[in-house]
Amino acid sequence: MQLILLGLPGVGKGTQAKILAKDLGLLHISTGDMFRDAAERETFLGLSAQQYMSKGQLVPDEVTIRMLLERITETDAEKGVMLDGFPRTIPQAKALDETLNSQNSLIDAVLYIQVPENELFARLTGRWTCSECGEIYHTQTNPPQKEILCDKCDGELVQRADDQPDTVRGRLNANREWTEQLVHYYEDLSKLHSIDGTGEPKEITARLMSVIEMVSVA
Ligand code: AMP
Picture 1 (cartoon, helix red, strand yellow):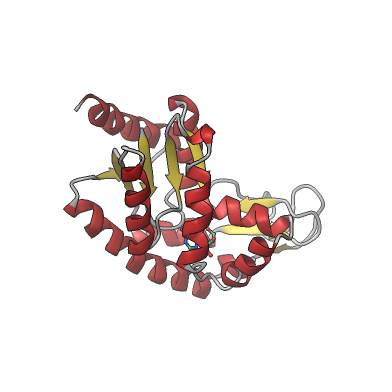
Picture 2: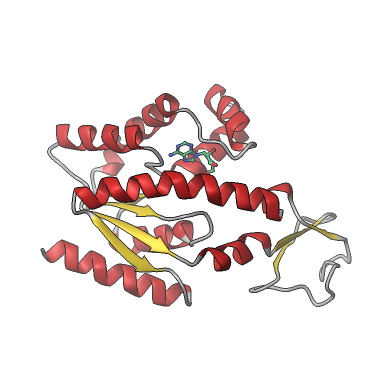
C-alpha cells in the first residue's frame, strides 16, 4: 500500500503515521524528520534546508522532490510507504504520481486528518520548555505542577519561538493554503478520505484503520 497522511500542523500526523506504519508493515517516511536529521548531521542538504525550516517556510520543491524520490525508490520502500509531510505542494504531488506510475504503482488513499483550528491553536501554543534542562510540558496534556517552573529542576519554563501565538497563527495560515490545494487535487482523483482527528490517539488510529481496511478490500 502507498498511503499519505495529510493535515495541518498539530493534527497528530507524526504520531499516527508511526503507529500505522508499524501495524501495517509500511515504511514511514517523514520529510520533516529527514530534513532535521540532515541538519543535525550538518550535510549540505541539511544546512540549506535549515534556512527554510527555521523560518517556517517550505524547502524548495526541486530539493524536496529529489530527496523523497530517492528514498521511495530504495528497496525497503518496496513493502509500501506511509508518507507524512509529503507532498506539501502540487508539483510534489505530481512528481510522486509520476514516479509511482513508472513503477506500476499508485497512491491507494490520502488520509486527511481534521481538527478544528481553535483546538489546533491550543495544542500548538500550549507547549512550554524548561530553560534549564529542556523538559517539555503541555498546558493541556502534561501541565507542570507549579505553573511556571520545571517539576524536575525548578528551572523557568519558556515558550519557544515556534510555539508563540503569532508564529503559530502564521504557520497555520500558510499550511491551510497548501493543504487546501492538495485536498482538491486528491478529491479530483477520488483518493481523499477525511478523518475526525479529535479525541484520544487510540480512537483516531481506529478511525484511520477502518478507512484503510475499506480501501484495501475495494
Ligand atoms: P514537519 O516536521 O513535517 O512539520 O516539517 C518541518 C519543516 O521541514 C517544514 O516546516 C518545512 O520547512 C520542511 N519540510 C518538510 N516537509 C516538506 C515538504 N514536503 N516540502 C517542503 N518543505 C518541507
